[in-house]
Length: 283
Image (cartoon, rainbow, N blue to C red; front, side, top):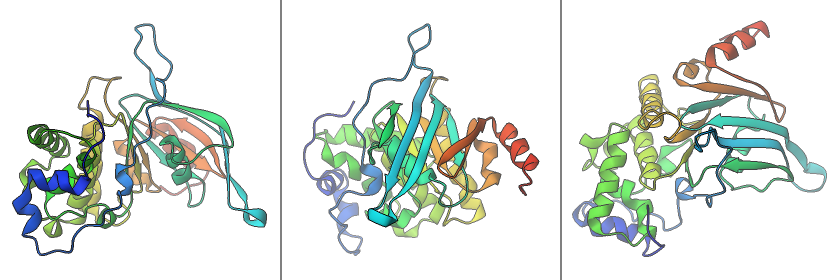
């Protein structure tokens, strides 16, 4: 596991790959932490089965949350209940404004609830819509190492973590590539690798395919699916994937549908398709 908090993030990346970080000619990266690097403190483990291993990586019970002030304050989450099996890719679908992204931030501890509770494995890693807002270092290797700069790690350990994370998203051959030469999907996979380098128990993924072409969309989906299946079932990384694209369901192990701040259905991808068709949705 990672050691105690230490030197600046950019410094750690540069120590490991100084040549790559100093010859790009690009403007220095911003010093503020990127969204994907924000990790929630590890809460207690979810409920366990007879062998003592948690069945659910995430359990949400009656979650309520209102946002805004005064007359503009509105209830965004209205008694949300959700269980996500550990080591699964769980998709969260629903129309714009239904509360999907808000729930994702609650799962990671970024927004406190007004009522109800969340019981989740930790820490969690975030990856958001636009990879251009997250991939800021000049080379792939330096970017994946960026978040590790918060820890006092030997160079060999940083290098090993970067290699492992890139292998998980099928990007090993791009390790020394300049990030500005990558496609949108490749950049998004680099962002995912950056989160994975910090060894999260849960990946929280918000509309990752929004800015990608079709080929890149499915490359990212395959990478996330492979990450959740890389460990033994029930023990691997859990991914919660927020999307409004029904065609992405084929990559999910389970799916939930949100509407009006509530989860109105949870089941297998095929069960959700049938439910939506019965409601008259065009898939």
